[in-house]
Image (cartoon, rainbow, N blue to C red; front, side, top):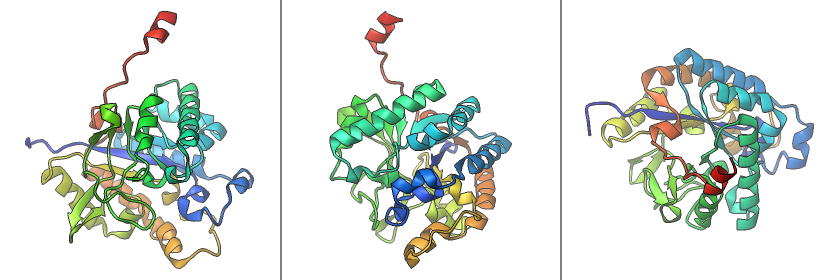
Amino acid sequence: MTGTTPRNAMTVDVEDYFQVSAFENHVPRESWKRTATRVEANMERVLDLFARHGVCGTFFTLGWIAERHPALVRRIVEAGHELASHGWDHTRVTEQTPEAFRADVRRTRELLEDLGGVPVRGYRAPSYSINGGNLWAHDVLADEGYVYSSSVAPLKHDLYGMPDAPRFAFDAAGGRLREIPVTTIPLGGRNLNVGGGGWFRLYPYAFSRWALRRVNQQDGESAHFYFHPWEIDPAQPRVERIGVKTRIRHYLNLGRMERRLERLLGDFRWGRMDEVFTIVPAPADPAREDAA
């Protein structure tokens, strides 16, 4: 470990409040097109927040969102951020066949590249839904031109997780893809998610800061942090008739999130996933070069 503190990757999962996995049984996909979106206004606040702190990050964007808000995709790219894929409509990989997954990630990548005018190399599965039972997804991603994935959670959770996965980046798909798991620390005999989202809203800020510093200083590794635009939107419409656990997970401390992000952006050094983890671009396609 050198004397320089590692830089961390700041990431955003670009989806709207009604598209989270916890609401799957309460907000049917067929109703999405009739639901007023709030993602564009929330993303304006996120992009302005990053600009104030001079931070460039990675935006894992749903194809469903990109199709409806193409100007948002262009603003992400124009501001110097990395554009990456979050799949088409937040369908978890655990709910897809290999054929359906291939169509999903291909369709999303093609749209994002068309709108953004930049290569899309990264992918994050909805709800970190690549696990020990569907590692074929890594091969599909590599086949489809993705260079890295951030889709594995090396922990035990009621909705996702692969507890025996490495805590830090590892090769997948026979070395054709780099998997960068969600950031964790070992505590009390298990890995604890300290990479963001609802956990960041649950923990006291001092604990999150300590945990990320531990990854940087004790492990000598870069962390990556994730959140969603709806997490800075306490005025979002409330979904009714949901369980207590779901209500707490989704709505806890939304009013404090933006202030905590301000502190986080100032307390650490941040960058894009592809830069922090030195992702190597996919080899050029000779057929494309010959046609150019």
